Length: 227
Image 1 (cartoon, helix red, strand yellow):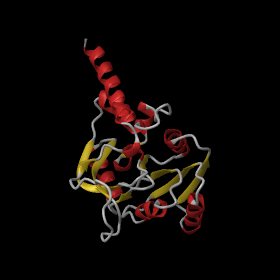
Image 2 (image 1 turned 90 degrees about the vertical axis):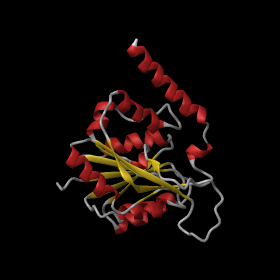
Image 3 (image 1 turned 45 degrees about the vertical axis):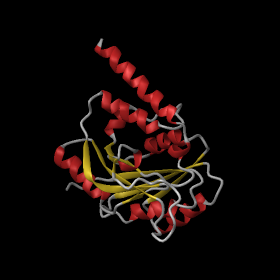
């Protein structure tokens, strides 16, 4: 495998409860040629204090303190400040399998692709003794999401950054651009990302009508092109 640097971007807002676990799952990756960009979206809790302490122990971690503008703007600023040839994202409450980046990078190199996803498993807690309070799905899911992607940064040059006008569903809209352009990708048939289910999940508390409106607009565009 050719040695290539990966910039791992973690956008966070008031994530003091889970941010250290998320960062640890990146630090524990078998692929070590990476940087961790933690972009804080104006948190008012102890998130930046926790990350600052971790920065002192690991020079690969960089903290970006930003004004509160929302996740899309935070991600875009992070992408623009990154430099590695590959980019991956991790939501601040999610976790990775230790071999996630290594396996995805190998796929991209072996198959000469620019985008790779993996399966996602939902969970509620790292403590198996705690009583479940949410409906996390038992079956593994195809991970068409930020935490499950590894991408060549050139796809952002080609398809642009995230739409900052979209509060929830930014990745859905961005990914749809790749689909409409029939961009080839690979889905690793293995759970390498773990999505935490809890009270404050943005996609859990947001209206499904937003996702439907994004889908409808893109279907309408495809229909117009076929006419």
